[in-house]
Amino acid sequence: METRDMSQRIKSIALDHKFLHAGISTVRSLDEEKSRLEDWLLKGYHGEMHYMAKNQSMRLNPAELVFGAKSVISLAYNYYRPVVVEEGKPKISIYAQGTDYHKVIKKKLKHLWQTIQTSLDVKATARYFVDSAPVMERQWAASAGLGWLGKNTLLIHPKHGSYFFLAEIICDLDLQPDIPIHDHCGTCTRCIDACPTEAIDSRGYVLKADQCISYLTIETKKDIPDTLTDKMENWVFGCDICQQVCPWNKFSTPHSEPLFFTQPDHANWTLDQWKNLSEDKFEEYFGKTPLKRAGYDKFKRSVKTVIDAG
Image 1 (cartoon, rainbow, N blue to C red):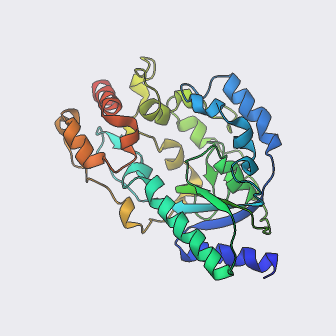
Image 2 (cartoon, helix red, strand yellow):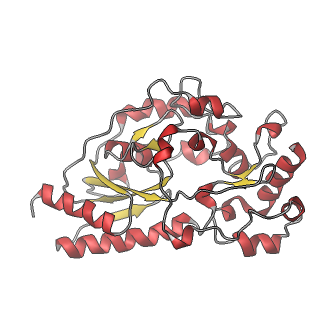
Image 3 (cartoon, one colour):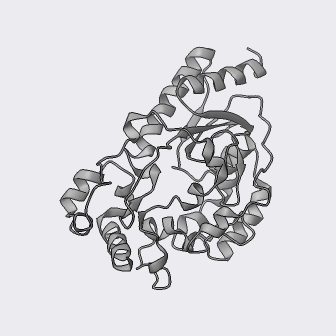
């Protein structure tokens, strides 16, 4: 099969497997990202995420993850679903409402890769990841034409916004690369203006992660700084503000993945229910969701912070 036909077939199979988008890049070292990454780390914007400073050469070159790799197949999987939360109540980011996406999408990637090999009648070497290895997912997805890196540093697609997970298959197939999409943020600064903790650089395109609400509710082991406790906007795990205000997300459509629906339905919980949630109930309700990553103690800390601030 010709390279072009093979590449088109792979993308078609990905869509058949319910991925929102698929695109291809040629494996290379992301030298243009090296200085940006080094500058970001030097400024300490990674906070306590020390893993971001490790495996830099591997992070910049996927050939170090998969020997003989020639192509990166970037994939997007929709997680958007409108969630209405009563004013003054704790909020959880949309992406974390259901079963942990790592487990859900990893299984889909395994099945997808098996189907690709069977359909194309090829035996190839590959590894697949979903936010689970030192891979610059957004940069590879942008290179593959899945969108552009917006001022909020998220990948934005002109027809589907930004509410999607990214994943990739790094393989030794020689495939035809796709063409990147131009930046369409223009003069818009809605995400920058809306961020309550000023985590997005005033010029955009740089995230001060150590000030981001998602970082404060998930990553840091320290108490949320007093200067930021009244700026949490009731978020107790993650934050969707910069996506909520992005005009491109008017094109987002609800997902149809059963495993991503809310578990449990906490929209009607009282403040007392949030405040008095036991560790056993936390495990029962959220043990299979991304909230498990933060753990009970961090979650309780965040809940107490936003309730006290309110």
